[in-house]
Image 1 (tube, one colour):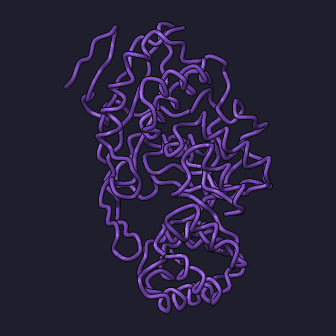
Image 2 (cartoon, rainbow, N blue to C red):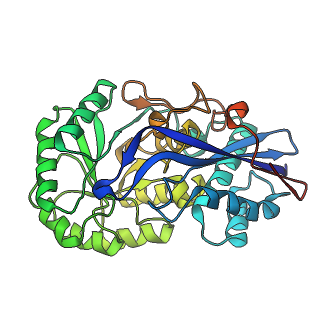
Image 3 (spheres, helix red, strand yellow):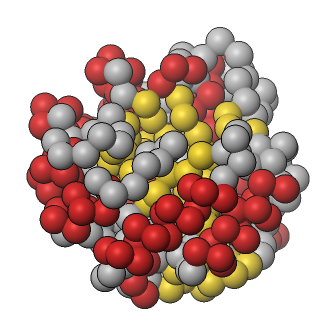
Length: 375
């Protein structure tokens, strides 16, 4: 089996509501997603998606995905998509770094492997059954009352775990906001307070030693070393996200004792192949892990749910479904969806998701038999 064609589409994914990070650092109204189809000479195709969360959250942006895939395509044509390690070595040689570019290709190749073996991805990742995964809401920053109202709305949709954005320039206000939210929670709820790197270490230590929380503190500071400094001086468990990209980053986080958990996001890590390696390492060192992608449709969400579902229950926390926040759905009624606070992976071979090609529109580029065709 050989890759004979790679087609990619660009699609804007408007958000139902604008999304804010604390301190006014980021406002998003739409996402720039790239969909990829990898075609083979065996008439089997696989789908992938890469959708950065804007262009200032992490060093990634939508046009960069498509430029990177254009660079990679000549090296991938003629390769066997079932040989995932070889595919990743080829991509890493042709384009060092740029992990977010490679995730869509890697995802599509896993989809092909699942289809030709007749197995869903959760089984290929080591799972024994399609375990439903608890999903958390995402609460944009605001006043305490505004955030509590959003939590109550999410509770009515089945969510029992919430990710709330905190972290401004006023530590006293952050303390009051966290205390108010904790006081408003029902007995079966908990919150991860996602700071998104907003605090300096001194501020993080001040805030976190003045609050009591049921859940996690996520990414309190900019760097891994700063987060490790904070971790030694607080009692709350820390989850790291934004500062971890490679396997070596995760190994260093463990050596520094910087966290008790991590967010496993295939798009940030270079795809499902590398994310699975990091997941397995996390299991071996006793981390608890949250699984999601940076952004995207139910296609990207479903890939993350496959990986989460195959993870031992003791190490699996929740996932997040970006498509719940989108005003469009290019994979209608397919994939992992929130049902009473849980999302289950499909049982069909591969990803179990096929985008509506008509909804994707005209391809941005087609790479076939060594040639490139642009719209």
